[in-house]
Image 1 (cartoon, rainbow, N blue to C red):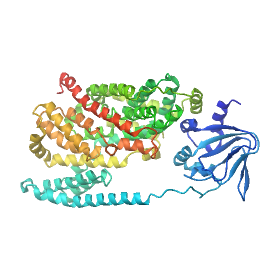
Image 2 (cartoon, one colour):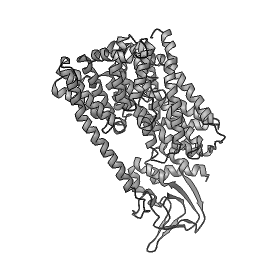
Image 3 (cartoon, helix red, strand yellow):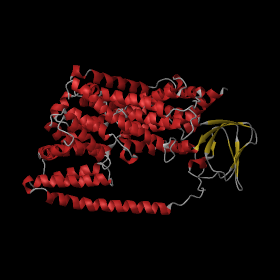
Image 4 (cartoon, helix red, strand yellow):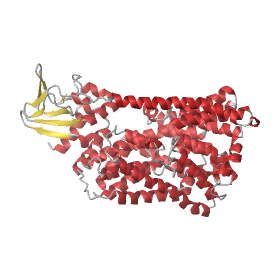
Amino acid sequence: MDEQLSIVEFMHSHPFFLHIDDSEKARILPYIEVMDCQPDQVIFTQGERADSVYFIAKGSVLLTSRRHKMARDVNESFGSEAAFKDNLYEYTAKTQENAVLVKLPSEVLEKLLKNYPELGINLFFYNTKLSVPKHSFAAEDASKNSASTLRVLLAWIFAFIVPMVTYHMLSPTLGDNVRVFLATISCGLVLWSFNIVYEFVPALFILITLLVLGIVPSRIVLEGFSSDSYLLILTLSGIASAIISSGLVYRFVIFMIKSLPSKQSWYSAGLFLVGSIMTPIVPSAMMRTRLMAPLTEDLIEVLKVENQSSLATKIAVSNFYGITSLNSAFFTGSLINFIAMGILPLQSYNRITSVGWATMAVVSAIVLIVTNLFGLSLLFHDNTRLVISKKKVMQQLEILGPLKSVEWHAIIVILFFVAAILTLSFHQIQFSWLSLFLFFALSSLKIIKIKEWAAQTDWSFLLMVGASLGIVKSLAFLNVDTLIKDNLSVYLSFLGDGKPQVLTALILVTILARFVFPIGPCFIIMMMIGIPIGEFYQINLWIMTFSLLVASEVWFFPYQSTFYMNFESFFEGKLPYERKKFLAYNLLINFARILSLYLSMPYWRQIGLL
């Protein structure tokens, strides 16, 4: 039997793989090794480090130890000790006749068992507790814990002191409600800056304080939870989960590997463009990073690229910046964009459509695309030739088979999604209602799996969105925006009174604030400041919002970017790329983001926005 067909048929028929999706089978196929073994061939010996589990496709294997002896036959497995990190084999494994074994590395097995816990039933014939001694990091952990404890202690001390100082420093003429509101805001700023709680906690604390003390009517405070922005985030997360879980993206990447010439420049450009295409379709950058991180690891393995090499870093950079560079260029490119639309005054919000947003951001998008494509070619150029196993790629496509119903559903959803956006000016139906209709339609047809939607939706972010929008509405209700305009306009115009100069000041303040605050809270804080300043200087509020969005995405250290931290955490400390080169490339993208704003200004002036 042809080996190409045998491995595909084996993965479709072996009990261990029956519960795994075809897209997952295709993903792990490059890691699988088929072994043709002779009689009495030793596979591993007792006491060796357990690094793989083995499945028997043909023949039989004898497992022996000092006290026990047992045989394993076709469709059975052995070496299950590899499912436990740093374990040793408890038996010596030797073939009894000509045998064909399928070898699965422990790293891949560990991830499979996390995603499919039920696989353990077909794998674990026995358990093991024998493990390699581990190095003790007690002293290091103790020092980290003490530093963390000190930071938490300081944070809560300041969280109590700063609001009291703020309240007493403010003029009594402002009124008790405004003074208490600003004091509560200062407490939230302290908690955000020390980053000791989840991002939604300070926003929720401020919201509850306003409700309990009756400072602002409840209809104003809770308005964020009934806004179009909140509805969009809630429903689009479900639509995105249906697209991601379909496996359509992975099929597209495999097809790209098969079709593109075996050149670095083609693959880096292709990966970047795949991420860019995904950006307006999957509205959560966090979802996109969770999808592309495993693809990064898979591609490095499929292309036989050495870990930590320049080419491996190029693949990681292409994937990451493909899904994050254009966050602000599309209305549906990031969940934070929906916060922006919820904060903007109603008259400004109603004038902006998804196509209009992309049209106004087109220059910025072009600058970032060109910078990435040239940057990838110039900064990561080496002479490494790509070794692509077309045989493996064909096996992966064979495992995936023809387009499945869930993939057709995903294609229909994408087409409907794009058509609804392009025809918005014709049907005049609000985008939030279209999203809600699509969500209910997909849910009723069970295309959206409720468990997957619940698992993939960032509920803490949703809480922060609803609470933050309520805080901004409360700010306007108490006329604090007027107070900000009167007191900060002088300081923010230190570069001049022109619109570009004021925008420059807001951008610089945002970049500095990002060293202290996470991206979500930082953007919300800057919008509270920016809207009254923009109205005072008669700056188009979309331009001001877009500039703050782009400036908020600038980061220099990993802790500043939740997207990067999520991307890096997937590899569990074993980065296949070189971190220093990755972060050095990020400096180029930071420069390109800011440059894109200034190159957009003549275009905005030409179309009458600036």
